[in-house]
Image (tube, rainbow, N blue to C red):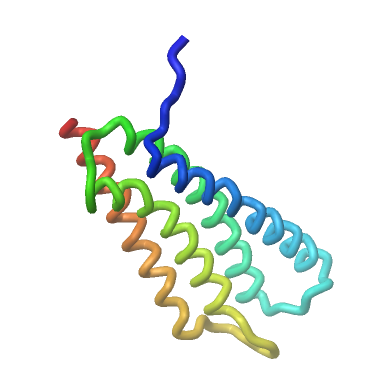
Length: 139
């Protein structure tokens, strides 16, 4: 039987990413409070809360897969780092962007300037998956 051996870099990142799942669980619990009407929010805020939660869950899962794939490449240095942290960083930035840009009380119906975090997350996601994809194709 062949055992999976993570690089030290991937092992540390995977440990941190796995621990971050607790925050996604708390977000899920918060969404149940929103759904029950316990937290007053506009439709816009509810939609952004769902988007932030969904992006966190999907991108954290993809980030863990990317760590295993990154260890199958010959990428090192800055490129290896980008392949390993691009997707997990996108999970943080995009989720934070959805949540933070919809904060506020009253009739919040549009994102504030913190929506820029979503675009930074999209850039991090693109850098991570393109670097990793090219690394897999050229190794």
